[in-house]
Amino acid sequence: MNSGKLLLFNTLSREKEEFAPIQPNEVRMYTCGPTVYDYVHIGNLRSYVFADVLRRTLEYLGYKVKQVMNITDIGHLSSDADSGEDKMTKGLLREGKELNLKNMRELAEFYTEKFKGDIKKINIKMPEGPYFASDYVKEDIELLKKLEKKDYTYRTSDGIYFETSKMPDYGVLWGGKRDIDEGQARVLENPEKKNPKDFALWKFNPNIGFESPWGKGFPGWHIECSAMGIKFLGEQFDIHTGGIDLIPTHHTNEIAQSESATGKKPFVKFWMHSEFVDIRGARMAKSAGNFFKLSDLIGKGISPLTYRFWLLMASYRTKVNLNMEALEGAEAALKRLQGLYLALGENPPAGGGKVRAEYRAKFQSYLFDDLDTPRALTVLWELIKDEKISKADKKVTILDFDKVLGLGFADLKEEKISEAVKKLAQEREEARQKKDFKKSDELRVKINSLGYEVKDSADGPKISRM
Ligand code: AMP
Ligand code: ZN
Picture 1 (tube, protein in one colour):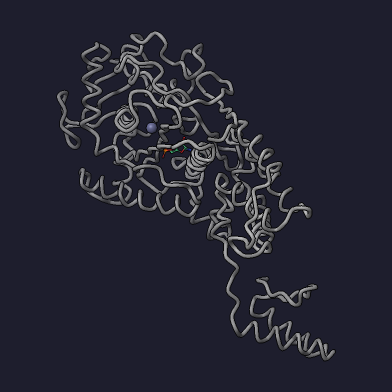
Picture 2 (cartoon, protein in one colour; picture 1 turned 120 degrees about the horizontal axis):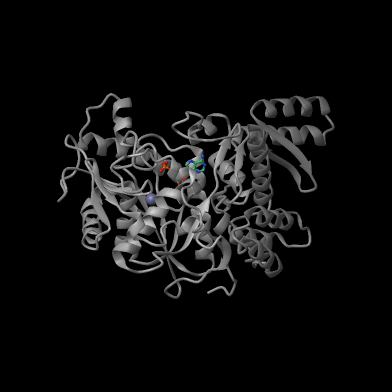
């Protein structure tokens, strides 16, 4: 186990706290997954890149990490609270499909596969699962029964609700003092609710849904994550992640249900939230239609790893504004880093090489300060440009940092240069030796037209992609 002290910003206390897991050496972590009624956008992906860097940091420290993710494939209404259209229903209508559970599942599986493809491309380690909420309705019902037994619930004409006034510290995740925040104010007034903050545990639907002791319908979005968190990680676990929009409703209500049902506090020790990706000053959102998918970026010549790299240039707690020029700059910078890395020689380096302690200490001091990746990246640049460090040591140290950064250095390979290009380069060199510069120039132009360039170095000519 590495002895580094890890500080993480806990939304619960609004402070950086020293991280220690509940059980020594093992971290249990839950990441709220996507609602799969459509493709995920690159804003959504930020929350998963953040969770991935967190998980990798914990693993880097030597912890065994059990990271679980859910897939929301039922019960998420468009207002994030308890009103509006069901998102999955919206997806089915959009695609002209009949409204039934089988089609809902098929739609979910389709977009989950696309999501998994994005996760892979952006080099996120796949969390355990991801588990479909619709496979755990039995667990939702069990949790709801517990709440009912403890008298936290009441019935209205459209569902079963949680009575928030029965929980004295409801809303601790918002800093405790605030009453009704914007997120909650958005909850449309339902005259049957005892309190505007009360939220649905089960919503009735006579046409489509799951059978339950209260009637046919769907579990609430919040109870799904409570039930799956408890099922896979236990009644209390270490870390829960998501985007900041989940604080006022989804995560606040997860705490309320879980702690009321189990009687154990806290449900989760560290609540961690990543900021938004904005576009032209407004939050990127599927509903607003102002979003990019990862495939859109690829189409614009921005690789998924460049997007990851660009995200790491900002703290996960800082809002970022999508900017194509900045992304193009990041693409060029990452290519340069990759080129400098490849110039360090074979993989693994001959003659070993060792992680340089002074660089490692600096890298960790930033990383362990609430995942300060922008400053950690400056250490990578500093290292790669340090001429006093041997190539082998550099390489091994970069690979060590990349366990956390996940920029894919270990998989980088020197591009295979075709025999035809090699032959042209050799002919050019021969012409140059004979001082036939006209011919050597012609050959250079020919090589360039094939997308390569030749640079003359002290060790002879070097061929690379233009
Ligand atoms: P959803 O699919 O709506 O359940 O969202 C999946 C994740 O993406 C959640 O953790 C959200 O908080 C997060 N998220 C949604 N929009 C954005 C955005 N524009 N920037 C960053 N994260 C976002
Ligand atoms: Zn969730």
